[in-house]
Length: 145
Image 1 (cartoon, rainbow, N blue to C red):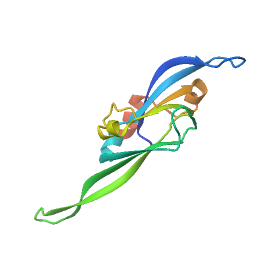
Image 2: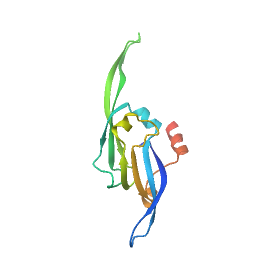
Image 3: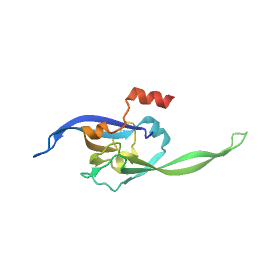
Image 4: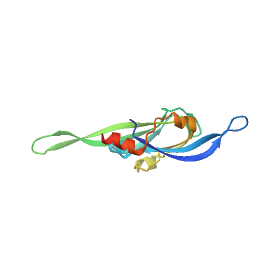
């Protein structure tokens, strides 16, 4: 599971000339509380190879959140604990095929929270239908097990 949330808003229908207009959505994507608990403190954002305005396929790399955290490396029965610095990267992949409208900045990512929008896409109905979205209730039931 990718532990993403998606906020959908109606967008103007796309299509021009001989191409029929299609229903379209402006989709904002961020990380769920569960995903945020798995990530340490974000120290940098690396944008993927796709620039805003470009077409992306579902699964395409959008950005990478570089993070660091501390974990217990050793402990004994007298509660002496040693901590180790752990670093990693959390990739964000597009859950839809569509057009990338924008990505978050380093400043936005450093204040990462459950409402932070990491990417904004323009997605048409077929792109949305091809995704494997679940509703919030179904997601929470799966996470809580």
